Length: 108
Image (cartoon, rainbow, N blue to C red; front, side, top):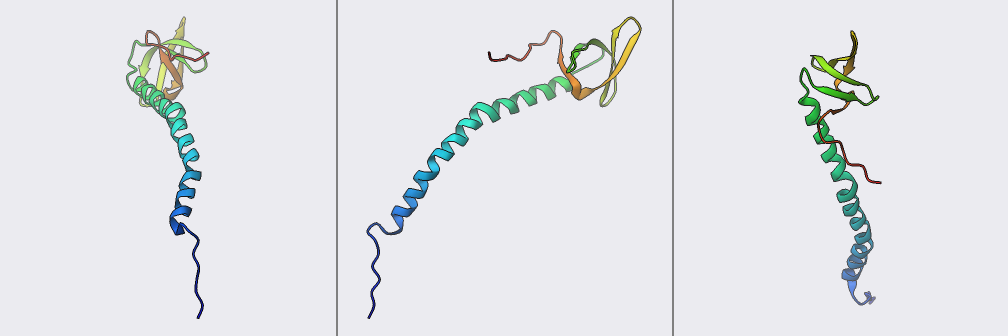
């Protein structure tokens, strides 16, 4: 007759050690979520709302640094007046911000 000997603690000790090994990884993920992912999602949502609110007559700045006044609005293309009889067409997603709105805060 053979007998099987089990170590003291059985399976409960193994499960607890696995959880203790995963705890630092979970903590790192939570910290990254609150410090990096969530603020980035908030910023993207605000930018999307700003792009949707652009109307004729708004002063805007493109991501390339061009300042202009919106004189034409299409679905995804804006026509900007950037000077004396100079108009350009810009894709809506390349508008960085509207003048007069609060600029994003940068950490130094």
